[in-house]
Image (cartoon, rainbow, N blue to C red; front, side, top):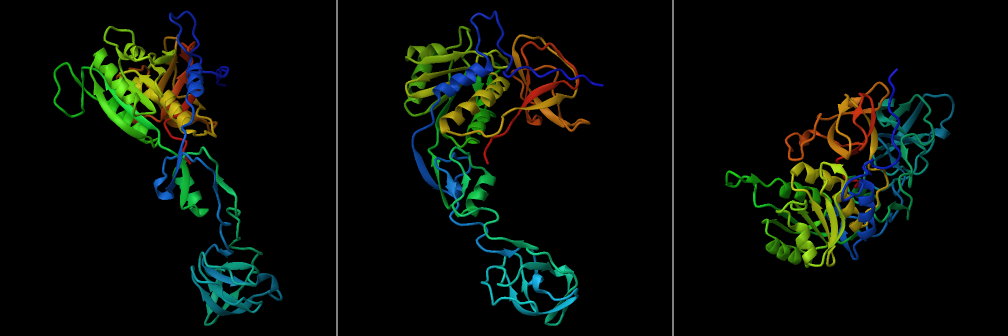
Length: 428
């Protein structure tokens, strides 16, 4: 019998002691974000076709019941099954042909039937639709050999959505499924929160746009396109995307300009404690406030959060994997708070390890991992690399989410239970 370790108490497990200065835990950092990131004021009404990724400012109510009338669920014949006399078989005269989109004809009786197609209104008197494969057509008549159950193959009016019913609550982020429900309810326009205005600034003298000429000590910019993709997936308005040199004075000028045009500034790099890390000093020099500085995680320990004027600021590490991981955990949460998005399902779920892991304890570790299938008990199994490197993104595309390893864990056996957060949005 395999013994699975008991799950830890709720929390991320990164509340380690003895660090100077002390670092926030994941949960404490997320709580700080939630406390300071109020939902945006202002809403607009947009066509449903343009609402993908937007957060509803008002609930969507159905304009009518769905379906609006009893209709055929498949091609066949509408009959009055309850009135059929005797044990059968029964010969019924076909009196009408009813394609979808055509109004109902005169009703059927115990001796008549109507040829009907999927989606067409059920004629008066009919209580069932018999599949065309289950009858024999003989000129203008059909032969029915088995009495149909009442309601067979009929979609009843209002069986999907009742008139006036709430289809989606305010705070839901619209995806294809939600748009389908809104369309079925007759909502051609929806009220959504205004778009979050985000400025992205990638720092570093060594960074050059991907594919351009670079010097021997320079690297291509991974963070800009990666974070642009992550941000636009949440339907924000990117008001500025730029690169910044490692110069405190010019960086301060750029931050001041961005604070004047954005609700949120996202930076990468320059937030550690080295001589070339200028973002926090520049922010402080402008009168900005640091709300947390560093989190006890690996990778991404320097991640920070603050405010500059009326804009919030999220400082991500410069190494691409660290930037990706910390945006997944903190950036998505921050955007959700600022857009008023309500999450109705847990972000994390439990999975089991495909193989043993040995690691150095001390910080909660977030490892990109891949769903590898299911074990004999039907539980999801994940696998990951045996080490994590904050600058490597070459295999990131082959992973499905982040695996959370508790701060105190130094060795986990195959089959151990861990938390897993998939790379996905919670739009509907």
